[in-house]
Length: 383
Image (cartoon, rainbow, N blue to C red):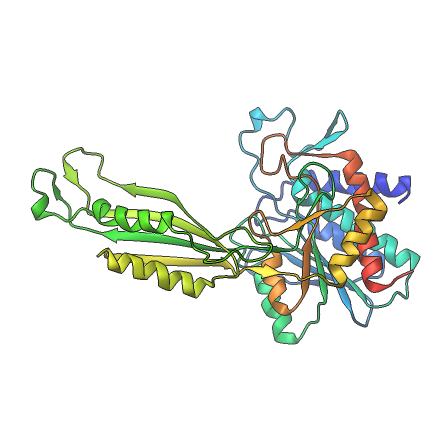
């Protein structure tokens, strides 16, 4: 794209970083974007749920529908005094743009906007529909964001065919990693019930730690996937927190609270993992109350039109052949994929995301609009 596009994406990224949009407070980011896209001829719809702002912008009338998906919210900055510059004052140093959200993912969101403007300017009567979906709840509980929007789309028969998520997927250089799916995520908070008592009289108590440990040792040592699922890391079980005790060394506690998480391949569903976990606990005589949180089921995009468009654009724009995998955590793509949509994630280098002094290389930021526009153009067959 032109030098003008590079300056434009830098300016918009800086304007977004300057808005401290910590989840779920959008702080006017989506209003700024809506104003620009409305001026470019896009139809704008606000889909606010609870405290969460969601924006749906479309241009075109027919299918197929190609959508960009991103979020305007960011995680908290952490200790401001540890940053080399104010996290919400965009700062250029040695070719890097610093600020909270620079890489995750205000740079990608700004690039979406600049790409969309350039596409409709070059081909106002383009085939298919171009779209942008934004939320302010990706970094939080993800309840009233894309999850709710997907329910709205399903209820009213809204069509999407392809979705490119701007999450920072790249590892060492821009475009070297493309996510073609994600593992599912399932979290449990398990309250193990026991009977409090004196450590000198264990026969008069029931130690919930002793009850729980053998069961959790079995769960943590297990190889969960009988056979590897193609393109997916193996299913894993991790204990994140284990809390028990009164603080006194002579008291057997009456309760232990364990938080654990599964990241799982399509070998499993959340229902199957819940049933298996509860079976193991019961076999070990663990009395418990469990709260399960289903963050999202696994999704996978087979090779097809979207993945081809991504590969061809990366080859043409960056001369990169990407590693197409399903690593990393979760993204809002998990809510869009069940609508029958091809979903791929592509964005900047992720080394600094959520960290002190988050940043994005200016050179990479300036390449993103052409990259995103090229993918949409190839997918839709635009001029």
